[in-house]
Image (cartoon, rainbow, N blue to C red; front, side):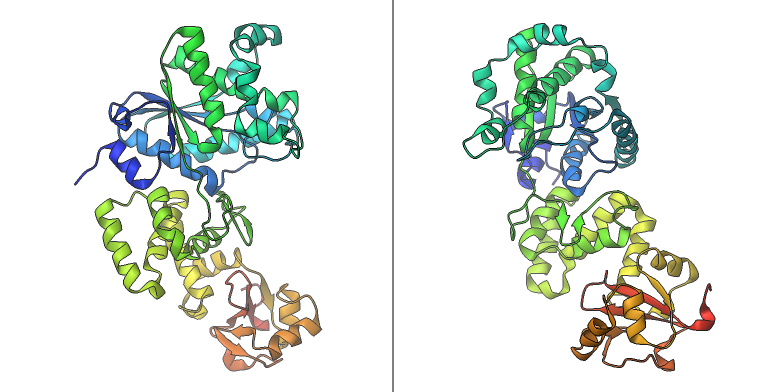
Length: 419
């Protein structure tokens, strides 16, 4: 049965704080905005969660305004940070903003939306005008009680600059500006933005006598570590294939813990409740098959990188995990694999190959790995210090250290060099 938007968001656990009493407010589409600061040249999977919340509203008929903070990035949001952010040069912010706008546009390409940059209206705002028109409407007592500010100003806190302290007023101005000029009535974001969103609601009420609302979703966390979502053992998971390859991206989702996979399916895919219940039932019966993780990995990789790249990532992953032999790949897939892992032309020595590809730091470490059974050729453990002719399949083999796919390399026979 098709659920209303409010019912769907409640089922997915996507409603944390709200300024409206009844979630049914969401079932009457109006105009909303979601914003992101281009503090880097790519979004992360942490940014993806609220962006998908925005997409759910758009699918349900809400008009979407997506804001890239070319102005707010020049200050830096103190929310969720325990130290002052370094100030970025204007040129870097512009470069980052262009990259983020391209990513947002691609992820929202199947929906109607408006894309705005708050630098366009802030560049002409004078300091005295801002203090008179905005600053006078905010009580210092109210601002000091905001959680992200009180934590920084506490006895053991690192303190906060006036610039970052003012960030909440700047974001509040954004909401007022979009309310007045674009008819926006709702702002959405992660719960770490709640104080900033309230600034906009308050400013609209005080300046315009108008009614506007805010909705936050819980921050996605890893239950095993309690840490904010978006990082892995290998580092931040980006939505740019130049920073996180499609295969690394897909593998991140494959590695999700059983305790998290149900929540992540609800947040990061558009799976229906009926399909979710069936999938999780099968997963509970045979968790070793990791069917829920595979579904999650397929859907999120396809969403971010497209169907064709998702298929390529899945096939490469099968090779790297030993499910598919390396010799079965066609030329296009081999070239794709080369972009994922190192390539080395063999001189016959396994030790040399391990060191040359960075799988071992020295000859002695390479020999220790071999003696401990931590080196694999085409998925089979080996302790041999020399490759054998039968190891090469169609002139190449897959060398791996340990269980992690990213610790792999392609080894090619000498006569295959450049081929």
